[in-house]
Amino acid sequence: MTDMTATATPGGFRLRLPGFWTSVTVFAVILLAIFLILPIFSVFFISFFDAKTGAFGLSNYAEVFTRRFYTVALWNTLLIGVLGMLGACLLGIPLAFCTSRYRIKGRTFIATFAVLVLCAPPFIGAYAWIMLFGANGAVTNLLSFAGISLPTIYGIPGIVMVFSLKFFPYIFLMTENALNTINKSYEDAAENLGCTAFERFRKITLPLVFPAVSTGAIICFVLSIADFGTPAILGKGIRTLSTIAYAQYTSEMAGTPTMAVTISMVMIAISMAALLLQRHILAKRRYASSLTNRPVKQSMRPLKSFIVHGFCYLVVFIAMLPSLTVIYTSFLATSGPVFTGGFGLDSYARILRDSPQAIANSFTFALAAVVLIAIVSGLLSFIVVRRDNAVSGSLDLLLMVPYLIPGVVMAIGYVTTFRYPPFDITGTALIIIILVFIRRLPYGVRSTTSILRQIKPSIEEAAVNLGASPAKTFVSVTVPLMLPGLIIGSLMSFITAINELSSTLILYTARTITMPVLIYVQVIDGEFGTAAALSTVLLVSTGLCVFIVFRLSEDKEASFV
Image (tube, rainbow, N blue to C red; front, side, top):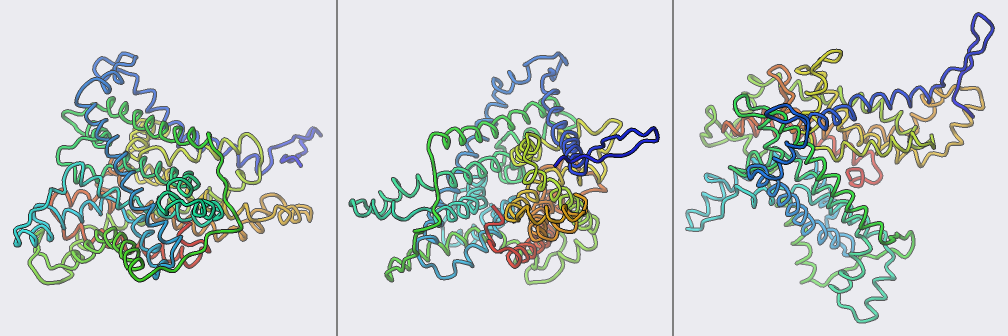
């Protein structure tokens, strides 16, 4: 059945107009072309103009790969990305194995807090670790009385630690799901052949779940190299590509916007190379899950149970420690930026008095973006799932791009693209809303497509056969059926939208400042009390959304990866 509408003209001719879904597809292509492809192409095009002379060529790229200032930043970025990824794997894989193979008391508690760690903004973790292990941190001061000195939290080790503890839930949740679906007969056969538990895990189990592990690892790597807030707060002179791109673009004295654009393209290339490498490795082998003969969780002897439970609880507690520290700090009594001892609501009073605009902006921008995401993701999901053609397949692939593009890069692309007529929206709230909408759209589409694939097309076909138009069928039949997916996707989008920092840090003005930006500025200025209060508002908002998702979703934590 073609998606066309016949309309009679005054001359008697019948004009065939595009149908509803054809029009929606065209709209989707135009939308993504303008607000996703065009900014990326703009960054790509500008990167070829020499930063000094304006001549067209590869001089900017030559400078990035030959000048020590940039090569050190490139090396630091790759090192932090790889080490952060490995650290997340070292925490996430053993935790997933323990919760999937043994009967762990409080397993739901572990998964819930892992999701909360995942949803909390990483720069809050960086700031909290400074309060604990900084030069004047609580733990540092406590241990100094006992004559124990700790290594500095600043620099690459501190950044890697924060990323490892922040991103390991990606590895944990994906690997645990894979471990629960493999055929246990492979492991049983290895055990019967005399393999030790470690050999069985290394030779049999880990290769079987490698697709899930590698997918989580790639996400950790891309997020680590793209993050701006953590290196900026903990770096103390450590240059990364994200911090250099921001500095080059925003500095009025020594900045070179063209070099910032070039660095942005290098970051995109690194992300794409990591994804292609993973796909190349996965293409060499076949991987299959099993719906039958799944592993059975085992009971443990007391000593082993104590060790395994202790490991699981310790990992989650340490990962949650920054959030708990921030909440605790927000209730300490302050006088200006100084903690005076005791408890009080001084910090909350200050943010309500001095920062209502940032709080209102954060919720307004996030909610506006989520409304757009809910509408567009519902339409796009139907196209991707129900319209089996080259365009729908291309849209599905294109929606993966926002996952790979760092926020700093997208923000620079938006400024260079939309500061001239006919758009001219730079400096407005609209540019932040649109960018957040595009960056978080994949969350909504992914959630709704998973629901839509479970709905039989025959239900919609029956409505069409009874005379309902495609638009009416979608609104009255399809939307109610996939409403749970729309709600979960919208909540996930809201969680990430309200915590957005890297892109809004470039786009904001005094009128459009948001809570994450204000928290970053206050941490840099030493205003830890108000930063903690604002961070707590973000954490509570995030926690409420996680709670609602858990109540609505059958898969619970699987909704977040």
